[in-house]
Image (cartoon, rainbow, N blue to C red):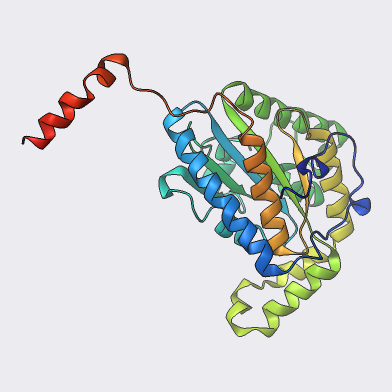
Length: 292
């Protein structure tokens, strides 16, 4: 992505999503974009190997977006060249009874990547200030001490929850987790096209849910709350990136390029050197093996 500054997508000041483009690289052929992605993801894979040996940082990649915004295929294509041991993917759906028996961040915390690995969260801890904000009645299922009715899920409640999320991320960053938050910015028209393809192509029917149409009617509400969440929680150490998502290959290239360009700036990420004693005896170790 050398022909575009990744900072274009980084949220450093309040944004209005309706002013943000949902298209990217319209003048480039899909094959060309895929060729560029292949090069970037190979470099990412090598970098992850180094990070695994370095064992100082974990990387948490958070993916949010409306239904059909391309999160699943992005994960498949961007991390294809990673060593299987180096990347862990988690997808967060409706909380289970076990998860509801804990605080809302618990299930996200136990799914965090260890040092040296990438964790990719498909839908994230932000679901707790997005879908629950659109449907505040869901909060009642958390059985919180100070929430007895939907009326208790008020502005003060959300203010507190946003602060908790920022503190959660601050704690992670201060303990070696590098956080990247990507909002896959899809247009309503392109979502319609993708839903229609799920209905028209038999092999894609399984992806369709009638609930998708119900949530689509709440499009504007979701956009409002996404915008608010992004503006409240994009920080220097845990920034949001708004990624144009109408063109899937372009969105994948943008995400991969942002990861590679920013992670490459960490000059301390190097493969560890052998200790002096081991280095001094390499020839002896080699000879020992050859003489077995």
